Length: 156
Image (cartoon, rainbow, N blue to C red; front, side, top):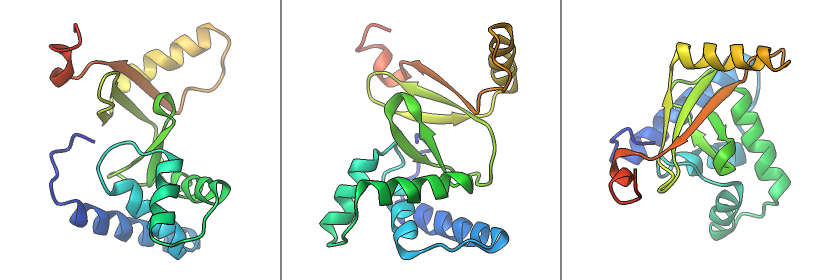
């Protein structure tokens, strides 16, 4: 995420604190593996793929398989601690926490991803879905474009 943070350790600690609180509220358990997956998602403030997380776990000597990582990610997503960025097949830490509909701006060139809260965009997506026979509003809208940093070098 392009939040300007340079102290990833602090952000990771805050994410874990939110996760522990969410687990207490829901009666769920933040297992060591779930915690480590969350930390790896937050490590660089950018979308990270499940296999990159798996590689990180294996580099630490942990035995994990893809289904285990995906289950941990789905658990964290259910608590609103991470978002799945479908266009990148990747996961992104959520600083807000808790279940909520979000929108994302995704740079097609560098992958920079920003979570946005834009009610007009969400309303337009829901209205378009209804016009095309879809009954549920989308959970998240992803707008793939070029960020300011890439627009000049990639013809934007």
